[in-house]
Length: 124
Image (tube, rainbow, N blue to C red; front, top):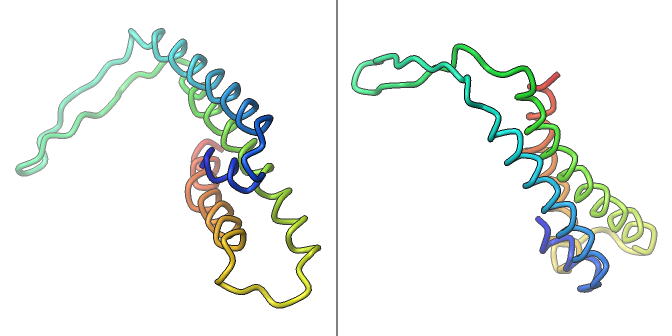
């Protein structure tokens, strides 16, 4: 997703620096929160031929990993949405499947709707 947004902005270095910086912040936050998960209690449940693990006790800040991921994905989404609005305002003909920008814009918006939105609904 980062490279698609980078491509949408015609390989602008500031976009690469911005997304890379926020990616590092997101990864550091996630790793710091995961390092604290030492009191996670798990039980194994046998379901036919499969064995599943079920978490019975989570730390209270478990939602922080998802929030950091959603924040980073939200930044990527708004960068893609901005380019989408600019592209649609410049478009004088119906949307076609031929242009690379149309494909990038369509796929970025679909990615967000199919990946990030369900996670936010689950968190709520």
